[in-house]
Length: 137
Image 1 (cartoon, rainbow, N blue to C red):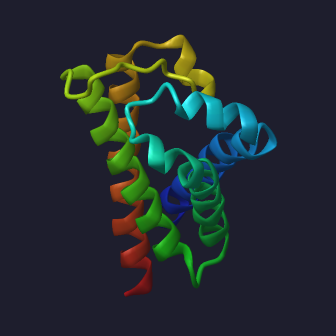
Image 2: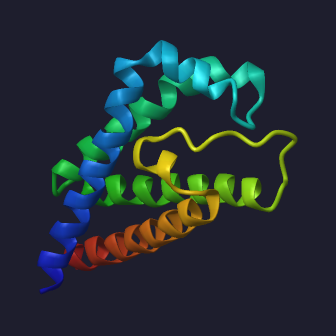
């Protein structure tokens, strides 16, 4: 049963990262413009526009193979933690400007729902890391 849950979590994150990365890469100019509305330093926009979708693709790729799955699941957990912290900063008004939620399904929900989804995915990723570790033992 644990193996089945592990496969489901792995598939979930492969789909999530492909869903997140591919539109960013296909519309890299648009994504670059969207980043200008985010609460991030201007100097970082260029490299984030390329680095973020490539990192999401790397996570999906690492999840495909049993020998790299733990790294991919750990990267998924790290990304979800970073995204959750960022969204928390928006909710708790840490930043000077408040961007739109410009990512696919997230455009239709407010920041609080976005954070709930992120936290659930973060917990799922943590479970995935633990199950993947368990599979190595």
